[in-house]
Length: 125
Image (cartoon, rainbow, N blue to C red; front, side):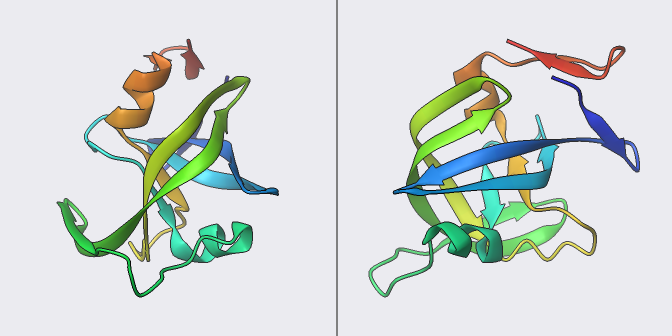
């Protein structure tokens, strides 16, 4: 699967299934410096994932600052032809000042056994 470099950063598209709804999410950053995987709340709302009063909110910190997120277990997440089922993601505002809809963190990358080839700009499994 090919990576797309945007301002020197590697991006891909993924598909997420929640219930009977699937969405393709473009502009998802491959980030080996992030422990967890996060997606933008506005996109996740299109598949019925929105905050509810019972949610426990978590604060995450990164180079981009601090953000409050909630957790959800999604039915399926696809990267190319590879899929994970029952995968837990974080959902937040993701207002980082540039076009980004999600981050695939080490939890996801390790679970799929992703190998990143930066010379060829591709991902292998």
